[in-house]
Image (cartoon, rainbow, N blue to C red):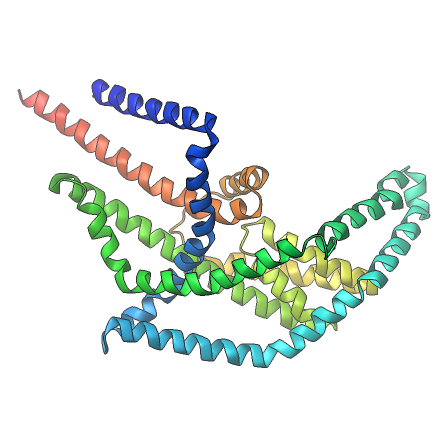
Length: 366
């Protein structure tokens, strides 16, 4: 047992040495880095869509060839996408355009609100005026706007690069997704061929549980986010909040981030409502809290269930650490990655424990 641990440790140490030596010569890892950066996002998107569409393709493939089922699914998605764009596209474009055009007025009203807060009797009495210093806010807002807008002429190459990457995704993602839906069920079998028959028996349950964990998480999160978006739109519209559709979609997207996402998504909604009136801001906050309670108590347990079995404190810590080191992408991906790692480690520990108990039993018999 100790020799195996020593052997594994030596292999890991050698890998780190090779990586370190390679990092000293930049051209060694540069092609690998470019390759990974190019295919990372399309592969992630295709993988998410694979788990989303796989049940439907499996159902359709019972009555027709699998390739035909995938093409039929593509046609259905295109028709559905055109229908959704035709239905909400004009209103979404109108609200988004109005929001962009209203940004200078919103900034002015925000500065006026901060000024009023500075002059508030309670703020002055408790010496909290420094918290609402306009100059700091204006400087931060200026930096954000400058970073978002930039100089169109100097960044034209970057814009062309962004357009090219978007077109690349548009063609690569369906291509990868097609072969995932067509051959994805066979990938575990191809992977198991690298191992002996004895090891295949041990590794197969690990792959199966990983697949179930990813499938339940991705499908559950997408359903929950859609549910949240619809409720946000109904709630915001019912109180007459401006830009309700844009703010609801933003809240739906940020809800992908566990625990922190709903509150990140609520910031623009509360800000827009606060500029209208403090009472509307209170209504928006109540709507967000009520919807999150409905989601956490009734929706999420039924859809995602207890398959993830992660403690809230663990989730919060993982999201914060991943956000600190990797950013938004890390906050989104850290939970499924952790869940897969947990399944892998748990199975390996169970196998090791069974083998150790078997050795102890054989030793006692001898």
